[in-house]
Length: 122
Image (cartoon, rainbow, N blue to C red):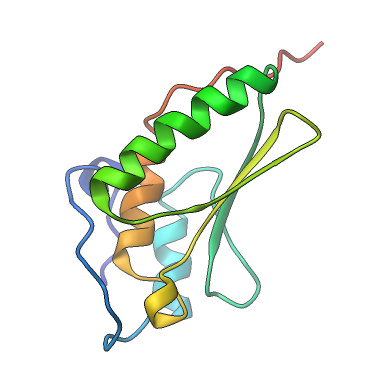
């Protein structure tokens, strides 16, 4: 998988994955993650993750609801985490193959297009 710019990834649609395909190799995942600001490749190279500190609880829920609609439209579903009422994290992985697929990077790019109310720095 060649590393694509975020602007190219958002134009793509996730493809159904029922397994039977190889996960993106760690080196290719590292190259792609560099094109997605704020996302990180987890140590096992099987998931990517991004974290935000949002304004308040309702900002977190609004953000998650918007992400859920995008994920449902692409039929690729992230793991959503909310702790401390405004610490938000999203992890992406293609469960059917036990690792990363192009779908994870496509959805990450689309999530980055979602407006989110961040906590104001003092």
